[in-house]
Length: 300
Image 1: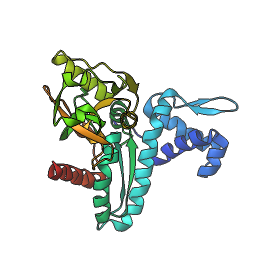
Image 2: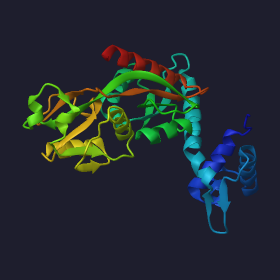
Image 3: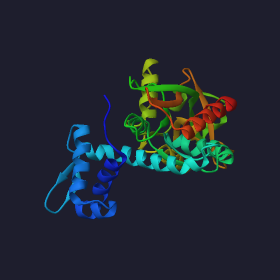
Image 4: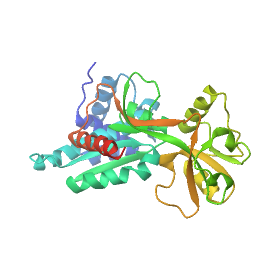
């Protein structure tokens, strides 16, 4: 089913939401208030539901309207960017790339690829939402971003996953910890020590617990945190050890911390690109995704 609306209808909706007032929005868009109202009514008719709640003093988005705001913002920004890119249409070097990325990948890997990409396409801009796995998938599904970098394994018929790498779970410990003396470990080796883990709402925790349960294993934790970076801080302070994806650990030699592989079983998370099924990418996003896949392949 196609939705018949115009760019100005979307601008009208976003303006009213941001200014919370029909009169000010009409002035900002150089429209009469009746014309602005007709734009909003046309958009609501096309969507099939109210997008704004109106009172005598205040205008706000309905629940559906609030859900559409990030998507409308992205659509308008991409449209405006495309207009400016017409000047450079021959070389196709302008544009905007919007992606949702796991914080660990965003911090440790993505900057390298973006630096390489920007050297070739200096006029292309990036909007990066560094989000946990579940939030990142929702951003892709809602169309807030063009694609995401996420953990694979979530079942959603509307999304397509393309594998990039395997990221094994490893032990992180201080260099003076007894386990640091071993070249590799088994899960039972962790039992005597204080363990720092992330909250069960984390996609990493869910994946790890499920994989261990298949081998009838369970980790007993002493500290539970929200972010992987916090767990590393507690490890560095000498409060315990932690199990986390290798990509979330320091990639260079660290003055206090070491990582060790854990075997029997070896558990890893599969990181890949996630897109909406049937969705299309902007030329800028298509080029960046191609470079992203190639860089991961070369490095792994």
